[in-house]
Length: 638
Image (cartoon, rainbow, N blue to C red):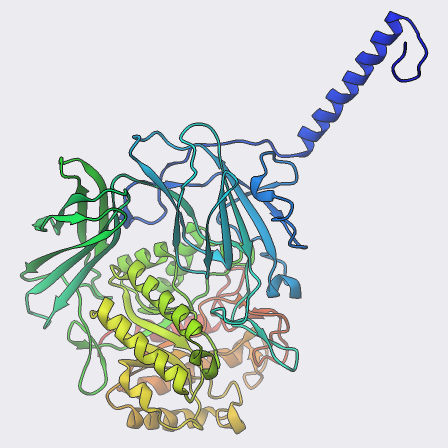
């Protein structure tokens, strides 16, 4: 009997129909497999893009998978438990998935999913594994083998999650849901004004913007290491105090021993018992006669190395740094002093942004940016957020100081009255200091940029707490913030509690409140007034610049000629002010801001901020040569 028609056709005909049915199934399966990328699980190799840090880092590079989730249905559809490659496309991490997409939706935020199939490297049974994400924008929800292992909010700073459900044999699937939509109290904010215009200082790229590592830990883990230099005078002996925070990754308490060297000499630490899942602090001190001091002229670096052992003498982790000895202070006359000498710094700020890759820069692009600074003769740089650790290592090597800032950007004073907002900002500050404290290039911990010009109670409270935070964690550096340079703003007493005040100067470019900065001839008098208001604070011009995207009359904003003369004029004014410690052009390169961006340019190219000295194609604008000549004739010290 034919099971499909009810008629009996004989065994031969029945068999042929079964064969045809099976063939159709095989063809359909083949088409399905060909339409999806092949699932390939690789074993990561020991590798790290930046040098400093602990051993046991395995770079999760190679092929990843990704998929868009425009309707935000991925969690309901259980994408976190997906075991096939159907619906997933291949990519490589780091990646900004909306690079090149300058639509409003791209800017306001999207949801995207990422997946990595991998096998765990060989390790002892006692070894545990930790995922380290260097930067995800903005909300990350992470699963391993279908089980949730953690969430994180924020970007530009790393976070770590224990690989609690890792398989030591077979394939593991790491899945990350990335949501770049901002919420009410997120930092930095991304808000819409009543006029419909969006408030934001740079493009909102979605993705895993920096590397992901799998870290192996066995019994003990260096949770934090700080080589703190202390130098009383330029010709004095130096003291280096080494702080090491060691975590016990096991549930049972155990005794740990730390051994180390600095500059080839032995460091001596006491042993400590570390509670299960707890931490202990180790401390050592070394005196160095005739130290080689780090400076832009001669960026001398010392090698530091630590290892941690179990009570049986087994070494379970090493930690290495390349750091420097230098002092940073404010003189009685309100000057930044590096190793006892007044500085006279010149530079350009940067954004981690490229036309092709968005904020997910390659090592080559980071080297190129630092190469531009060196060619220009710059001795300082700045960004609105903590830069990639590899960029910091390049700055250490080439003697470029860094104004290091957390992205507390253009936030109304009332927001700081909310405890949640202050706590988020202070957490960012603590994480930044913990990550970057061994870089001699980092000179200033900046706690914000262009927030309320007249700080209210909440902002004043945040500033004071941020000051105490830095003093407790790292007394070897300066604390400051950047503010809009408006003559209408009177002296603010809270700023007298800072070491450094950054001033964003756009005299002659923007109009400002009641047109008070429309005339660049008013700049000199304004700077004199600032120095009178803040005689004990160091003053740094943290921004000055003009858009340029075409040739034209020198009197027409947006032309190369206008930009060239604008920068020349401002640099001449700065040179006449011995109380200024430095000045930074905004910006080194053009970068993307937000939909509709004009930036004061009558003929803009939104969303691109074209105040850069270099355009998207790497072409140097005419102002480059003028700035380069001035910078190369201006030494880093007075």
